[in-house]
Length: 421
Image 1 (spheres, rainbow, N blue to C red):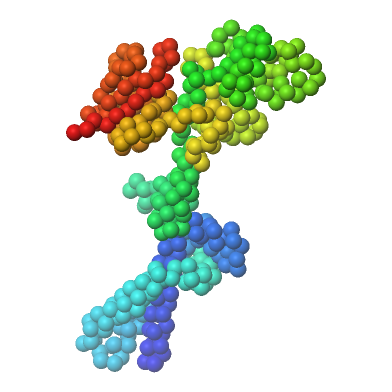
Image 2 (image 1 turned 30 degrees about the horizontal axis):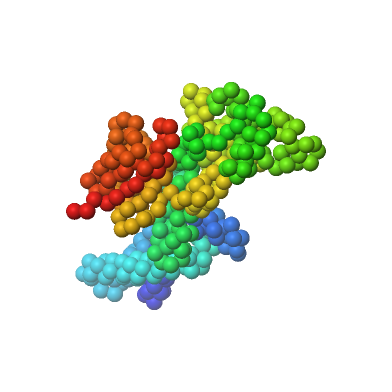
């Protein structure tokens, strides 16, 4: 082989080495999600990218085989060329020079370029790699079997299906998107809520039993009308004898429809009763949301582990976990849960969520608070008894909580005052 031809082939080998190195970096720099997006986009290279998406190990073996072949070929040619030009005396120097050339032109430079131009270079190289994939397939197939066996022997995992993106990665991407100005804060919060919704149980968002407005199924229609007028609810659960025996839900629109057929005072509650949906308090609200949608229902009765009624949950309660507060018929209608009167003085609804309460006051939710869900539960813990109106208790050495209103044994309102130091 002539000296000129060997020199030319060395240059070609370096170019091929650069191609394989940059192809490897470009493809591995693309996330599985990005590759999946390209494949689903159906572009001219979609079918080639599907090879990388579905057989990444075999494609990578193709690249590594090609890269090693051209690097070895270039080194052999360089050694032969050195022998022809100056004999064996310059063989060591030629090897060193060739190593530097391969390292700089075949590895560092092309990989750096591909890292910063991953998608653009992958689009250029993928078709060639697909051709080489089929050309080298017998070799890559055997190598893949051998490599898989070795990995399994040393305790590694091979071929295990992984999601295109994990929940942690998605949350990180959402946070980064907000910092980069791609997402607004409200949108970010909503997306986080959508992710977290699968972990929230019905018990965490339900209207508790003590706050449910219900009617005895044997009551007169006037009793029902009085409840409707007082509370302005459009759906009222009906019970037979005790609250633990819910027999259905009264929909006000059904009552109005029935009143067009006959005198309203001659209607019994049983005539306008719909069946009630019952769900355990441990059910996740994501599953309940899908069930609500499938059955076209907006309210369900929550049952505790003993079969008793624990509370009530509505479609609005679930949506609030995603989009934030929605003032529906089961929320406080006239008074806010947390009202600032003066600097460091607040009037608080005792049914307020304890997490929200701690956040408003900028205090940490200590471990002893974890078993309580409302401010009322916290007050009972601080009092260690059933408190009376006017009783005061200290919270974390920062605030004093004064009981303002009690109905029966239920705490309704408290005053929170910052302790001045």
